[in-house]
Amino acid sequence: MEIYININKFPNVKVIIGDFMDKGKNYEVKDIKLAGQGRLNLEIAESRMQALMKVKERFEKEKPLKGVRVGLALHVTKETGILVRTLIAGGAEVAITGCNPLSTQDDVAAVLAEEGIKVWAYKGETKEDYYRYLNNVISFKPNITIDDGCDLVSEIHKKHQNLIKNIIAGCEETTTGIIRLRAMEKDKALKYPMIAVNDNNTKHLLDNFYGTGQSTIDGILRATNVLFAGKNVVVVGYGSCGKGVSLRAKGMGSNVIVTETDSFRALQAALDGYRVMPMKEAAKIGDIFITVTGNKNVIDISHIKSMKDRAILANSGHFDAEINIKELKNISKPRRVRPFLEEYNVNGKKIFICGEGRLINLAAAEGHPSEVMSTSFCGQALACEYAVKNKGKIPNKVIQLPAEIDDHIAQLQIEAMGIEKDTLTIEQKKYLESWQEGT
Ligand code: NAI
Image 1 (tube, rainbow, N blue to C red):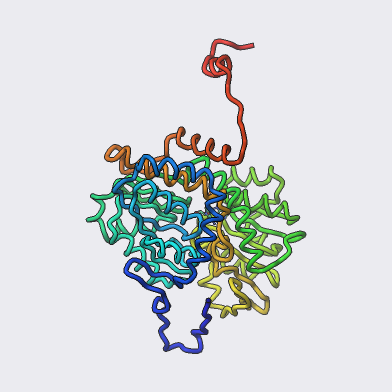
Image 2 (cartoon, rainbow, N blue to C red; image 1 turned 30 degrees about the vertical axis):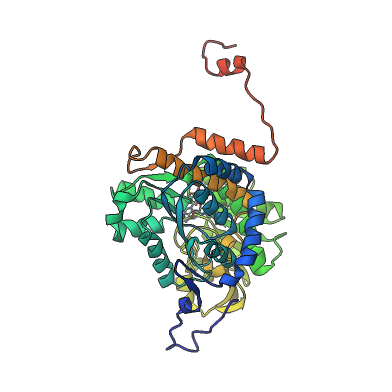
């Protein structure tokens, strides 16, 4: 159940959302009675995550994570539920919270709580609860951290350095988290090794490109039900996510415009057939704007002021910093017109913001499809195993998993899809490794 309270009407009333939660010794979730639906959703996810299930089967036999405490701050979705079960199958103890106030699937949090897993998460978390829950995971004294966006790692480094001696490694799921970790490494602030799961080829291709492409459009459709065909869709940032979003919007008949600050990516967008222009120009003609940069204020208030009446804005980058909603709120009060859609009045024009500017695929939809998260989470599970096997040998840096592990994930996924690839003959292998033969 969602409760909408107009706090403007009751300025002196402090709303403590956490008090409405179902609480147990080891959990805090919205409604434990949602566990039945959560279990069914996990069943569906499991049936579509065959690559990860293969890892789970092996983990059950070999127990590579025996006695290891894994603390997670990930989007609490049905797919994450399967990752949690995989880590437990491998012998790990697990505690989990969300990594974004709007991305938790409450039925999944409920079923995890029912299965006895330490879980603190609900959709619509206050900032206080968000950090309280992160600290609950930290109090669990994890040996491995799995993060999506680096908030868990950052909190440990800022306030709990005494726990670092027990941490073997951390695993990071997204581009924004990697950017923050690299900044920590550069400042010599990083105190334990980090595995950049985000940078696996199998994660990047399926998740950032195909996953964000499909699920971002899904989120905007669920929030607005707008027709994409014939609309000017402005995609801000032409990285892996932006490329996926552009491709899917084009497939739905939109006229895609890309804005970029990187010359090579701007060139690539142009050669892929999109119009490329600065935001100050795109702002005037766009109907739907989608930010996927990992950067701040890429749609600023001056851009919003020059937009057409009824422009729709959505963000699919990790943080809600990409659209300058703070400034927008200074000039207009939002009106909630339906779940995950707010209308602002800007100089007489209606401007719509989806999902409060939080990553729309998880706020208004269900995140990436299970097949996509299967490869991402094979990466997470195998990264945990790699960390344990190499305990004490990995430097306090951001590292990538060896290419063989990435290849293994790709192989698991093509097998799951019933695809058979070719193999090199001995002659071909030799030819590719030699330099003597020419024309
Ligand atoms: P990326 O680094 O490959 O691409 C970002 C692009 O944005 C770069 O090409 C950069 O030049 C461009 N950019 C930066 N500032 C800009 C500006 N002011 N105007 C126009 N372009 C600008 O990153 P990737 O992997 O595409 O991820 C983007 C964001 O999406 C990150 O925050 C990442 O964490 C997040 N993400 C979200 C997912 C989701 O489920 N919604 C899934 C995966 C990543």
